[in-house]
Amino acid sequence: MAKQASQQGLNGFQDIRFGMFIHWGLYAIIAKQEWVMHTDRIPVSEYEKLAPQFNPVKFNADEWVSIAADAGQKYMVITSRHHDGFSMYDTALSDYKITNTPFKRDPIRELADACARNGNVKLGFYSSLLDWHHPAYRFRQESGLAWSDYLDFLHGQVRELCTNYGEIACMWFDGDWPRHAIDESNAYFQAGGSFEYEKLFDMIHTLQPQAVVINNRHAEPLPGEDIQNFEQDLPGMNAAGFNESTIYDYPLEVCMTINDHWGFSANDHNTKSTRHLVHLLVRSASVGGNFLLNVGPTALGEIVPQHADRLRGVGKWLKANGESIYGTRKGVIPPTGVSVSTRKGDTHYVHVLDYISDSVTLTGVPESITSVRLLQGGAALALTRSEGKVVVTIPEASRDPFDTVLVLT
Ligand code: GLC
Figure 1: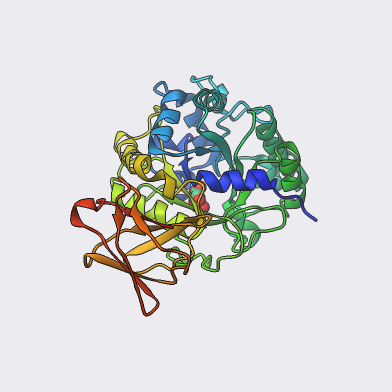
Figure 2: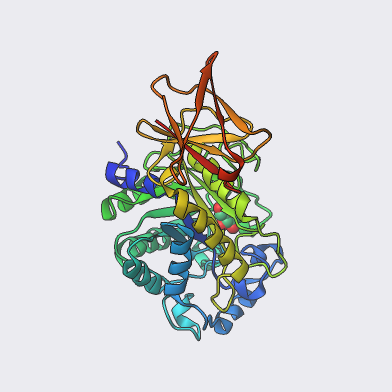
């Protein structure tokens, strides 16, 4: 039997519900998102020239952590190494790393320290399974290296991340797909064998028993994976078309961009509204999922101010309504056209997201429910039950512009 995260770790991860995803790397210099090496067909020798230019002097770990904390985000997942192969921490397994740039510092060390100082934000790591730079991944034939050399590197880096930065919330993997869909004509897409997941996940669960393992792009989690992840897709919606719409009996996580890209994109101003972000968080929680919301900091090390503003806006709503999100599980009161629900034990939270009339009409409300009140302010509302339906009228003055939460007990 493959090891899984401890029950305590798994529960703890679900309780925190909202996290900050951070895509940050050399690609921020070009400012055309994290795939630019591939999309612009930049040779390794050219792309490498970004490293001596990287100097994010405005990076301040405490500031990033405080933005997350203000947003009500209780964990962050940062790209330790993305597909471009550049390590954003002081790895002993490669010279292609941030501590060899003019910046010299290890931002992951600084974030780990800042998270510890803050106490309310946990740290987790994204790791790319594929690598467009590593000779044993990309240039096996030319380099005379073997697939096992790449595995030593990949597993070795995960060991470093699970050993050197204290207790972590999760390990988050991405870039598995080339193994399934190898395009021989395209050097970017050749993996040399299996990633030996069983060994990899086992190591994580041994070194960090509380940490959950998340692997993007698997419709059904593999043994040793703890969370089913949905990318740019609310579970059940299949909006992204990755055939992920089957929801397995696992804790879920939804990851999404705050605009339309993961890595910093200078021309992408399509920032989601605060209201929409609150709705994505609430809808994720209502199906039993965490919401991991991405920001792509600039090459100077700043979280885009507009993004920070939106995050703070979500935080403001959470400050008044967090009880209906943190520590909750999937709702049992079915969604309607205007509402979804979450649950904590016998307390049910109905989130009214929109008003097409003055009331919300619910079905499937457990018989034990006899009263309803507003979460904000606590005023009791009338609950009428007839023909299996519960109708609650919400006074106009009590409506939250994003989500009015009703507490049913
Ligand atoms: C996609 C992108 C990748 C990004 C990931 C985040 O897989 O290709 O760049 O890191 O989404 O989920």
